Image 1 (tube, rainbow, N blue to C red):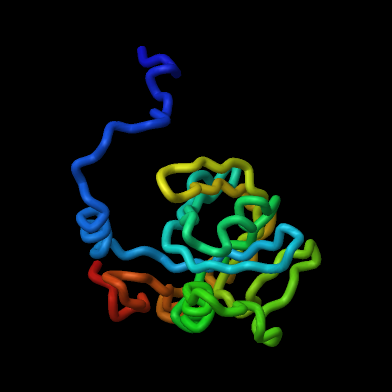
Image 2 (cartoon, rainbow, N blue to C red; image 1 turned 90 degrees about the vertical axis):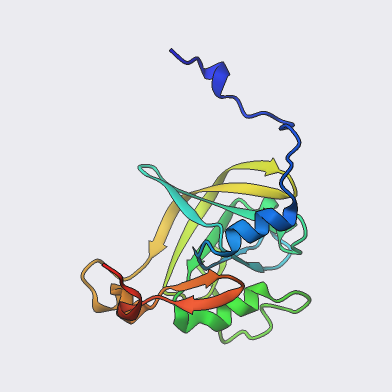
Length: 188
């Protein structure tokens, strides 16, 4: 039997012989869905584009993502009690690029964003979004992994034509390039 002590995270792992360049090259050909994370910890809204979002549990509904210490949005996201995770389709490429661009006011165009009744900034054009409470954070290397429990979602219901991949055309990032998924990309 394995005890819980045997599954502890090691605070300082053994040094790796894998260089950052080698690690990036390995992941370069691993496509990922594109999301934009927004938050406001009381000093103004922030947004960043992330490809690290994934679901962890449906009951309770929990997702995680990571943020780099180099992002200007990270301090606000780390202080925020809640965030909005926007899951983007190809039609929202402009929002993905906005969140990925440094040194600009991502909220200057007030026609593309609003605030939820609970106060969080969000992009109504996103194919789907999840508002959630930050329930845990873990620093790893130069990033922070953030766990979020879903409080509210907005997405096309199952069976709705806009939920179909051909209509939604999910946005993915692969080998430093934006791509769309649809019927043309099905292989089985």
